[in-house]
Length: 349
Image 1 (cartoon, rainbow, N blue to C red):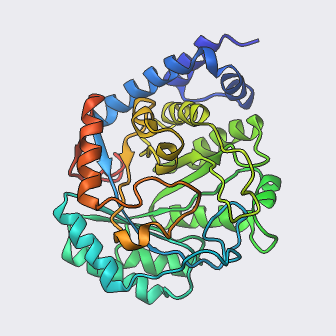
Image 2: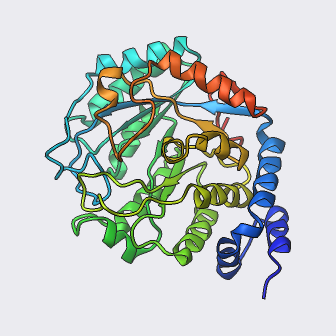
């Protein structure tokens, strides 16, 4: 029905495919995987060059009010060793990261009501005041329009909110009844409206996910046009309802990275820690498949092993300086260079 090679070339030139065409590529990726990665890398290099942007990840709380079935810090996991960083500790992480060359900080945590809008706003203002040449990204889940507005007014530049799945029924399989697919989608629209550089994303291979769902994900991303997209393989956590489920595929994740780059040529696209966890060379392979962002951890070493969304997470014991030097060498070996830069989306710099 379709010529696979012609489809991938069409995607590079038109960035518009139908659901059936995306599905054909996903089902027949074995014969086109290398070509897709080559084209995705070429598109990325044409826009961003050989630069790989780093984000300093500060995981500041592993308390969460939600009970997502796949997540190791879910409220129902009574085995999780909970912690919270003080505002001063969060700001201290950014100071240390700045000295290491980071110019974007990602403040990530569970949906923890302890951190009010006022507390988070003060942290954002303090980081921006101390480091005005830096960007601050937040990843703290679903909030009201007014809360997002306050955080935006405080100086937050970007917001990451994975939608997890574009399929409403699949969302219900992954989350308890008190969580709403409609609200998650409205949050993404609100973030875009408020002028955040907005990040969406999904797990690859989550329980119940189909290849048809993945084709729909690509259509959704094309319509939403987020500035950032974060995807990674589903990795089970032993203390969750999905603890015995099969992990997602690194191979399929890499192919989808290439399709996302070709669908959204300007997108900021991380090679995630989850990808590096499931494949020791996953982050390098991610870059070679079209990714251009890495997110080393700036959290204090004594809490890194507590922020476990999934099992066997890498780099939980490394000092930030050790981690960044390791990444620089690994990236250089594949022909790319980690740069000291905010790394804005090309339309938002």
